[in-house]
Length: 129
Image 1 (cartoon, rainbow, N blue to C red):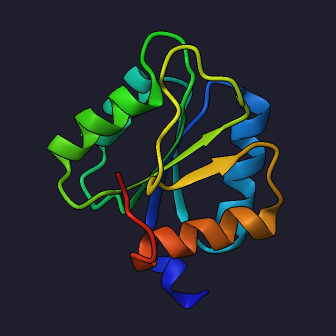
Image 2 (tube, rainbow, N blue to C red):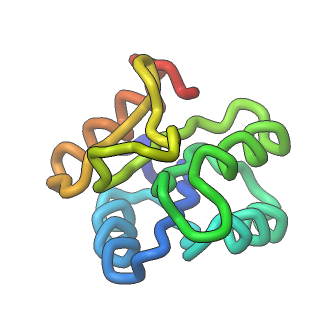
Image 3 (cartoon, rainbow, N blue to C red):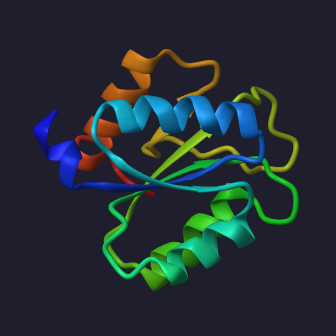
């Protein structure tokens, strides 16, 4: 994936181990990865990053700020950013899980599926919000 070498992903997951594994997969594929453990850290990372951020890959259910709230904030600050949600939750009492037409990855996920879903989202084969 040559295109990956020019793309930056902001990866947000409150579980450090999960975040590290996903970051390694993305870096091995050539993506530049900015990591954050929370929505607030992600906003700070976005503010500190002078270049483009092509993709927000965010966990949906996190303490303090949900992935959907983060996506809404970042989308207004960085128009055109592609958003992919990832979650291990199946039940959704809070209404945080995305509806149809949203880029969504169910945990656990294989590296192959993760990369395929990200590629599809960046190619515009699915809606980004």
